[in-house]
Length: 529
Ligand code: G6Q
Image (tube, rainbow, N blue to C red; front, side):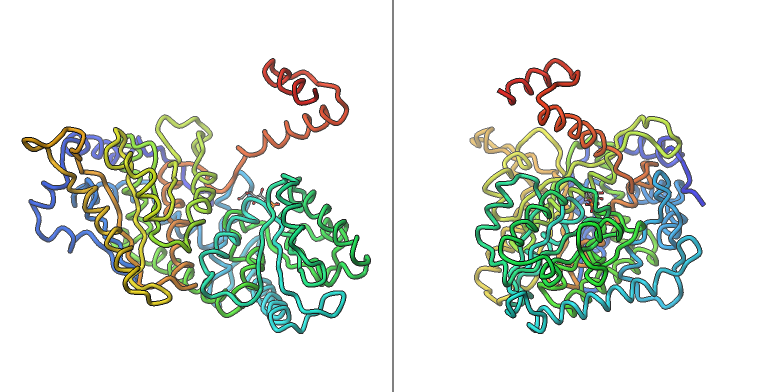
């Protein structure tokens, strides 16, 4: 069954929210806290080792009730069921969206086109485990009989960002293998890395769902040629493996079928780190930690699927985001992990969130008449405090911000951690309370406060909590896409530039320019000298 197409602005809840917004827009959170001493007790969710405090939002119980009414009116509940059941909710590509199946522990079948996909998932996981063990233990030897020391992931977008993010996030849990990522078609990027590599001890993992991506194939060819300057053709098998849905193209590239890790159409690139796309992570942290990552995500899936909206973390976070985006007119949202291991979390989530919900046409095929797609950005704290926080505190824009922190440091350095976390708490307090005007206080030192934040306080950074954290944001964006009545799982917006680049490459190679707009023609002439 197709997802329902309901324009959210046509719902009764939306009208009520609009009226409610008129009452709320002049409200200061300080007054809301003053009115209700129990506010933090009421406006938080505890789930496993996660705590979400959303009391520092310009929202009351009534705001939340109306937002939940909106979720019910657009039939979020059925949409969640369709998502997990493998219905073709990526309708514009005629595909299911089943990254959740990759981490599912259920024994009942999950059907795609009438076929149970669970046995294939189990088989690929077993293959990943076996391969990872042979590389980590040194049983797998390179062409001169040495064990593998270095892994290079060659992929881009969804075939790069997730593994690259996790390679940082789970650094504490890593083994001896060093892992690198080649994504950009910028040859300088590739050649800089090649300078440091030893072909005898390096494994290359080519990751491309389609195996047609210009960047990945060009980089893989360059690296293969470099490898063949040192070794022979039959030795490629010991050093190159691939992850793809396109088995034929991988074989044409020269990778033997036993070195291919399959993936499937029902996994979107930006949600694929849970599949064999995560092979470099499975290698870096070992299969047990990789499994724990999947289990953490699966637990968040269960929470999302089975918890009433008012206690449901992804739903509450999505609804608050809609409140600011669609009623307050907030242009962006920030996300600040107080954790250096999560330095790549935001760029990773930017793809998931902005590629998924950056859509202007509703599920009814009509241009929408409201804002979709939040712009998300951020950097780890406390670094961010010394960079752009000024604008969040004293700028003219409303920037709802998620603060993500952990109760325990991994190496147990209490002095550092207490300082880190005191900043974490101080910032949300400052954003809430501000510093009011006072006699003798320079106007430049006044902070209005009333800047909304969510605080996510997690026990400890582990593979499992990182898995749950990523799944939380995956489901948040799903909820928002459902409410905005858009298709979150296609990405037609990245196609046009790719097509034009192919034409321009031909122009550059032949030095004969096809017709372009005047600016592009001018620039190409300058480039060609
Ligand atoms: C993600 C996108 C995109 C994709 C890359 C790489 O959802 O579809 O980022 O992952 O374009 O594609 P391949 O894996 O097919 O090379």
